[in-house]
Amino acid sequence: MTPIGIAHLTLLRLSPPELVATAAAAGYDFVGVRVKAVTAGEHQYPMEPGSPMSKETLRRLADTGLEVRDVEFLTLGPETGPADWKPALDAGAALGARTLSVVGVDPDRSRLTDTLAALTADARAVGILPTLEPISYQPVSTVLEAGELAAAAGAAVLLDALHLRRGGSSLEDVRALDPALVPCLQLCDGPLEAPTHLDLPAELPLGMKADGSVLQVEARVQRGIIGSGELPLAELVAAAPAGTPLSVEVPHLGLADLDLARRNLDAVRELVA
Image 1 (cartoon, rainbow, N blue to C red):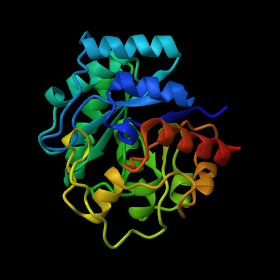
Image 2: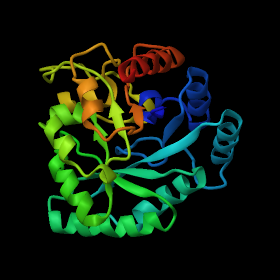
Image 3: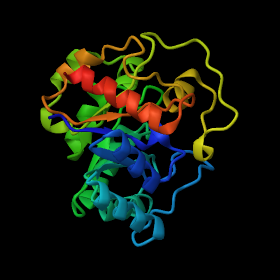
C-alpha cells in the first residue's frame, strides 16, 4: 500500500512529539518534522540531537511505529553553507529522516547547483537526500527547473500539488521526471486558479511570516482540505511514479488538529483507492 504521511506545516502549532501522537491517532504511516525555522523571527522547536524534545519524539515514534520520513526546511541562497545545513542534518539524522526539504532562492543557477551539490554530499554522509521543492513564489518555481538542478547536483525533487499548479507546471512535466528523482508527493486542495485576495490571519503558528502576497498566504495557512477543491489530485497521483509516498500538507486554521488530520487521511485513502 502507498505510505501516507502528514507534513508538519499541516499542524505546525504542535511540537514534534505532539505531531507524532496526533498522526498515530489519526492512522498515518509517517510524519515530516520542521527542525529549522523558515521565516525571519519564527520560533524553532529545540530538536538538537539529544535534546529533551528530540528524545521524546523518538520515544513516541517507537511507541507508535511511525517514522520521520522528511525534515524541513532549508533555504539555499547565495551565502548558504555547511553552517546553515549541518544542524538540520544532525537533527534529521537523529530522527532517522530520509530527506531534507530545500528551496532555491539564489538567482545564480550555477552557484545554486554547486551549493545543492555540496549539501547533497554532506547529507548523503548521514543517510539523507535533499529534495528541492519548486515553489511558485520563489526563483525555482517549476518542476522542469527543479528537476534539472536536482539531477545536476545529485539531489531529488519534492512535488507539491499547490505549487505545481500555481507555478505553471503540468502533469506532463511530472511524467517527464526520472522516477528516481521523486521520493514524495505533497497533497492539498484549492481552487484551480489563484485567489485574487486572501486575508492574512492575525497570528500564524510559531510566529511564521507571510508577507501578505496571495500565494504565500494560501500556501502557508489557507490550503484546502483534500477533496474540497478543484486541483487535479487523482491525475497528479497517477502521473507520479507508482507507489510514491504521499504527504498531507494542508495548513488550515479552521479545524481542530485531530479532525483535520483524519479528514485529510480519509480523503487521500479514497483518492488512491
